[in-house]
Image 1 (cartoon, rainbow, N blue to C red):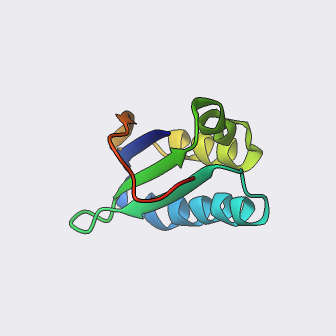
Image 2 (cartoon, rainbow, N blue to C red):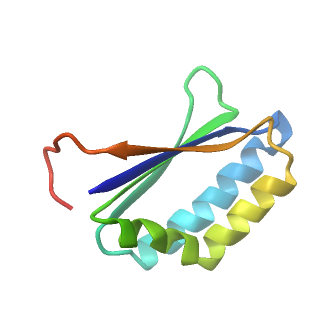
Image 3 (cartoon, rainbow, N blue to C red):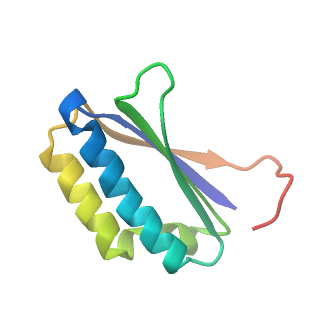
Length: 102
């Protein structure tokens, strides 16, 4: 199992647009699921301008599939063009144990 958390902070005026862009990606993934992938996005409770994306996959090949989704590429382009306050930073995680199976 492979997992990554990506965190970044956007300007206040870009928060709602970023949420809409994320929703487009999620709508696509709901209609076209990637087998073995669980992907979600959250805002920080104490700082609603900070986003965290969590992608948990059955293996590394599955983890890479999100980058092949056109709407995800569009989301990334819009995020970069917005001039985020804190650029996206990925943290890759090593599984210790899980109470579920992908």
